[in-house]
Every structure is written in structure tokens, then in C-alpha cells.
Length: 438
Image (cartoon, rainbow, N blue to C red; front, side):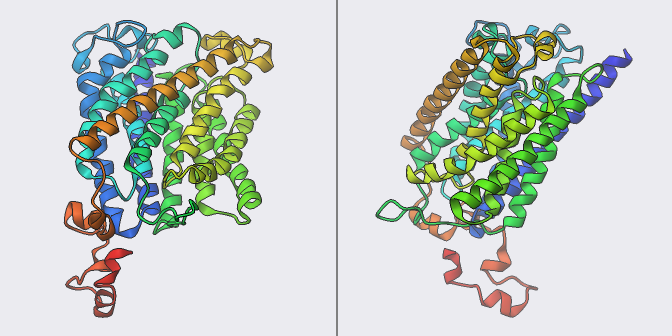
């Protein structure tokens, strides 16, 4: 009884840390958006979180973890907490069903938050509702079932402990499909195809968001045991932190080499790439493995940002480079670096570097491709449908004026754009008029 109580408290706390990641996404995306859109980002974060929780409660949890086929589940609608047995896929944990649902719902909300980062400054608020229903109610739960719900990938030994593939690849590739459908921000690309920099309004806020996300990742990874007693949660926290740190250092070096400067945004995305990469193998590798994974993810992230620009895709916060490439590195790393002890304890095969042969790496590659393809295809279809029906992108005039005022009727920073009673007269008057087009 005491062990179950300790496990329950830990998982609830870890779930709250994952919930805190919404604050991290808010600060990161507000900092990297233009000032005239900061309020719209805040609205997007809180509404999407609410939608994710409701939809995952109603149908997402059942498809992700309910009994069914290798493709998806079909029991535990509205989580059915009156069923003391709970879903079989999570029966390895002795905590109650409601706690399991809470923790897993926070993951669904993170995946949804990743998606919308690709469409800052130009997506309409009205598009959030239908996409959240489709993504949290169908796309994300299907991938989750494949890996964590007893589906076909788990049956072949695919390893993804805390979501390099399930969360980060799924969110990133659905998001990049949305970026393609919605198109680039006005003025992002020149006629010759070269990208114009559109800097965010607050790099300090963006870095604060990264650090909040880093704190949340401790619960994200170490909480995925769905227990604490007898679990190596301390080691997972250390491995996770090392991967984030080496992700930053890799990005620092590569930004200096490729850009000739120590780019602040690349540093932040280096942390995200390293942390996203270690999510999947965090319980399967030793500390030096986590450091190597983070370093590789941070290094490949920087050229990926440049490649996305060359492809004329406008990804304002580098979702594909950070979450997407980080997720790919993490999924493949489990095929190389899973230790013999971890494989024996958690199931699966040792990695290639530990004498496990190429079988595990092969299934990691297959899973990575299938998750990315499924997320991109279904995300593209969902965004195309939204575009053709209710509309996905704000009008040109609304985009130029800023989504704060056009969509929500008030700026996130009202004293910057309009005269506010009580503000300093020179500050209020000096920014009226043309500043709407910042």
C-alpha cells in the first residue's frame, strides 16, 4: 500500500511537471513571435491545452490504450475510471486509472503544442478546435497505441520510453505539414527564394521558455515509469539533463561554424533537440550515451534549420529541426545504445553497440519512418480540410495588423500599440499608427 501511494504521488507530481511545459511553450513561442501576436499565442496555448484534455478524456485515451487491434484501441471511452482493472496496456503500473489518465493526457497536450509552433503569426484561432479534435482524438492516439498501447510496433520490440517518436516526431511532422499548407509569413522569403530573418520580440522570454520546458522534461521522462519505488528515476533525470546540456553545446559549435555567430535561438533549440532526442532512450542508455545523443541532436539541428529555410518552409521556432530531428536521433539511438541490462529489465533487445545485432536498429528505423509518414499524411489531410472549409490562415490585412487585435480585440502589449490611460504620454503617443505593422 505504501509503495502504491508513493508511486501515485510521484506520477501526479511528474504529470504536473509535464503540465508546466505548457508555460514553457507559451514563453518560448511568445518570445519568438512578433510583439503584435504575443497575446494570440497566449490564447492559443491555453485553449489548445483545454481542448487536448477534454478530447483525450472523451476518446483519445481509449484509442491510445484501450483493448483493440494492433492499429488502435476501442475501450475505456471517457476513461471509465469505475473499471478497477483499467486498461491492460498500462497494467504494469499499480497506480489508479485516473492518475494514469492524467499523466498520459499531459503528453497528448504537449504533442498538440508542438504542432502549432510551426504556424505562428498567421494561423486563425478558429482552426484550433477542429484540428485539436482530429489530432488528440485520432492521430496522436493511434501512434500512441502502436508503441505504448500494445500495438504492432510494440509487438516487434520498438523502443520509445518517453516519446521521441510518439510525441516529438508525431507533433513535428504534423506541424510541418501545417506549415506547408498555411504558407510562409508575409515577407519571409524574397523573390529569389532567400529567407528574410523575422526575429522574435523577446529572446530572454524565449530562453526562459526553454528552461521551463527543461524542468518539465524531468517529469516527462522520469515519470514515464508510472511509478517511483524501485525505479531508476534519478539516473533518468541525470541522463536527460546531460542530453539537454550537450544539445546546447552542439548547437553553439555548429552555429558558430555555419552562421559565424553564437545564435541565441539556436542555443535554445539545441536544448530542445537534445531533450527531445533523449526522451525515447532515456531509460535504456547510460550517462555517456545520453551525452552523445544530445550532442548529435544539437549538431544536426542547426543545418536542419537552414535546410528548412532553403525549402521555403516557414517554421518560426524550428519545430522540425528541434523536435523532429531530435525525435529521429532519439528513436535511432535506442537501436545503437540500449544496454544489455536495460533490455533485460524493460524488455526489448540490446542495441547494436552492445552486441544486440541490427534487428533492434532495423525496427527503430521502420517505426521512425512509419510514425513520421503517418503524422505528416494525416496532418496534411486535416489542415487541407480545414483550409478548404472554415479557413486556416488569417487575411493579409489581419496578419499585418497582428492577430492580437484582429482575432482577440486587444494587444498582448497594449501600451506598445495604443494609448492607454495611466501610461506615460510619450510612450503611448509615440507608438500609435504605423506601429501596428511591426
